[in-house]
Length: 211
Ligand SMILES: [Zn+2]
Ligand SMILES: [Zn+2]
Image (tube, rainbow, N blue to C red; front, side):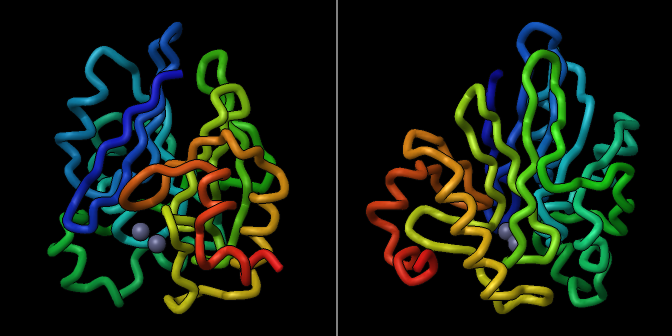
């Protein structure tokens, strides 16, 4: 599996483009802004699915554009649909390069569901806390976790936004750090990549979150 991480928009959301090199099938995760940049990265490949880790506008801002262009299903957890066209984004959407209204998900993500991309498959981990529907996508074979805003290098996701919940966030972090090994690469929702091992050792917030 080939992974391209493309920072998009004013808030530098990490849009992940996953490609199965044999079948040339591709999946886009968190297309928040800069649709043209994302489309360019898909040249030579066939887009099969659009996935959002959660419903915040900086992560879903170009789902509409890509769906209209490629007519492929949009995957998201149903617990976040209330966020998609929340009037709270009004004005902010334009600033960060989002095109609303966002279509509702065609396929509902569920915990432990497998999403296939050619020979590879991604497992859905429903990890609420930052939002009620936040899901990580995990490739067992490549040891890559697409984490959305669950976790950042040296930080954790905010729980004070609409639908956020600290107890859920703690539970989700405990789960991820008990299920995944240290050599798993983590693509965070914003900023740098990290690994489970680095966070286990150096993340100052995790100690209290995991205990
Ligand atoms: Zn978020
Ligand atoms: Zn975000």
